[in-house]
Image (cartoon, rainbow, N blue to C red; front, side, top):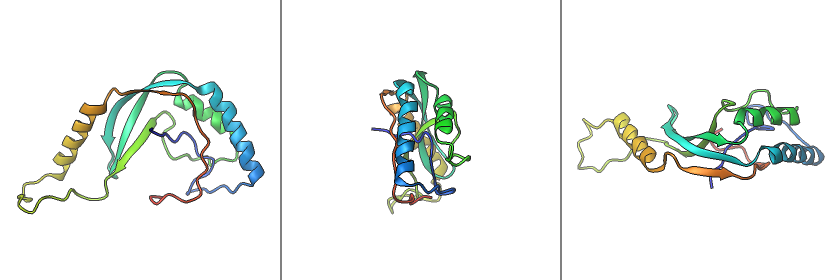
Length: 153
């Protein structure tokens, strides 16, 4: 299973406190929006490595509701949500991994001529060769309540 963050009713940069009743109302509002938005037929357009070390899968919507339209409807349904969201509204992406440091090389390798950039470019090219074009069907969107701030936030 892959996940996509479509919209944040609250996030670490702008926490929005909510009562149990407010959360239930948010869940209902999100359900109304998402029931009309699915299904989505998507394909993995490419995998990229960001400058901060995140390996992202970028998806293309083949059929169904455009992510920008879904986010716009969620914005209307969740008026208390932070104005600044944490992604580009037109992108549908999955974070596959985060690279936290350079690769560990066997001691016998000559590291003086080793290029970390070339290593990661080759790694991303291999991943693209294996999973680019993968197709999936998104049959439902969920409201997810997180109780802890992300370790990366």
